[in-house]
Length: 379
Ligand SMILES: Cc1cc2nc3c(=O)[nH]c(=O)nc-3n(C[C@H](O)[C@H](O)[C@H](O)COP(=O)(O)O)c2cc1C
Ligand code: SF4
Ligand code: SF4
Image 1: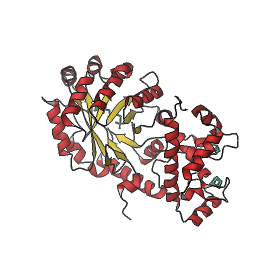
Image 2: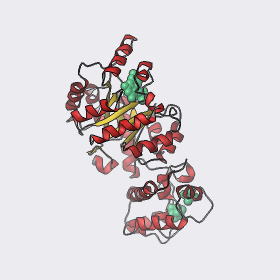
Image 3: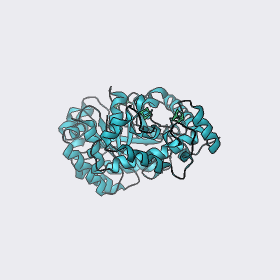
Image 4: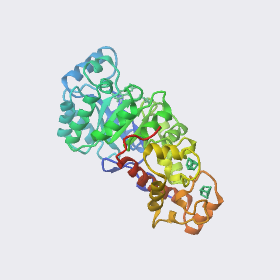
């Protein structure tokens, strides 16, 4: 069966359906339209660049080139970014441009000139000395006021904003994620370094942004681990060779079709992020659910109503012979259970469809978690 990409992933970025949750991460001097077109069959989004967009950062790029690094160094960055984006118009890829700028105004000027058809990614990641001295890259993870101002300046142009960070550099990545969300950012692109999924889960539990997990995603197993701990997409730079991308794309698609929810979290008691509340039991026993509800400021009664209201008039409302009398409380499909499966059969629901409804329920629960006035989520 040929599956429509929207039905498969239900993922939209910048108003476009993402064909596959695989992102081509930027590499200065390397990732441009030609590079992306050669990989577009097995990617959903590309971050072209990084491009240095003002005098200070272009000077930094020149000194990096002198030191032997590759950099894009067009005379007119705006014209070049526009031309590269134009060449990708028909590619089916969501296009983002990764930029290094020394002031918020520099970023806003590029967005003002090119408009909302592409995503604008702030490079708060580069750790090359000349870039840091120009006030961009990693410098923005120490001067978070400047980073927030940059996000706000871009948002004023009415565009979709991504922020590329390296984990473990800012004082507190969770606080950073929340501040970026509150400043209006749409996407957080995280180089997880060696922190792995624990860091990703913390960030997932702190904000509702679209998350791209990056660093050493070389196989489906690694990608799946990221997707199960909160990533909406995974990105590749050094290993974005066509064979790796093709194999990842194939496996992620198979997994999505088999399970019905390509980035379903693990259950909470197995280390899942808070999206997994959708799989939690009725709050009647001592288990990790109760402390999590406490931290979220959600009482047991409210949780009961949230789950039951969330499945009202959906096939998950039924299931009277399951442990807690409704599929709202039932476990993830990877946990075998005869009672749930019988209820699904009665309702005429396949396991992947069950997971699609669980995803809907999770989205409703997350809306409450992140719309609430409570400041903090959990580990
Ligand atoms: C040669 C090279 C150039 C890079 N240039 C940029 C850049 O301009 N902007 C940026 O945000 N990240 C840049 N990165 C970081 C990558 O996008 C990515 O975060 C990092 O390589 C880790 O992911 P990987 O394991 O998939 O390579 C660069 C990485 C490499 C290897
Ligand atoms: S409520 Fe159930 S699924 Fe959730 S943490 Fe407790 S035992 Fe695990
Ligand atoms: S009926 Fe099965 S799936 Fe549902 S809560 Fe009980 S053990 Fe979990």
